[in-house]
Image (cartoon, rainbow, N blue to C red; front, side, top):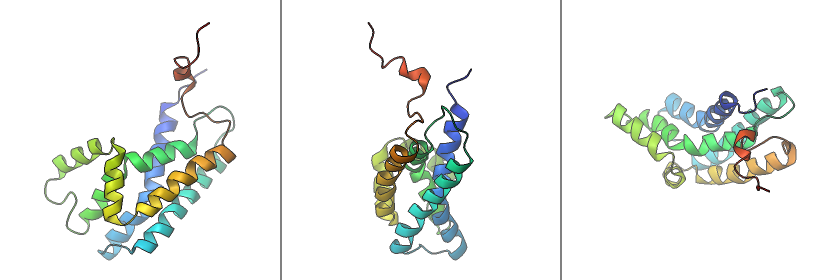
Length: 161
């Protein structure tokens, strides 16, 4: 029996980033303009919650990773990269040096404060804060039996007798 499911965790991370940042990228690509702050602050959390509900309703029961927590992780870790992709459609972002910029934003995305700063400039800070409060609450109310730390990693946190 395999307890550590890296592929499902990775799917949740990627799907969370796509659900949250995807509408922003699509609006920028379609209209070639930045969406309004009120549009971002309503649309982005709603799309992430809809994606979470689709994921949760289609998930298997049993011991599996928490979709809410790993989707939120995807929003934070891939946020700076997604904002760069969205800005590329407006003539900024990865427009000038795509390889260096892509690698730089992927590495800076590992430090959450840069996603916070980027969301402030992009106008989606409130949406980021809303989902940062909402997704752990969804985990606690709906997915309490699902794990956050993989069972294989839990052996390092247990007390030795």
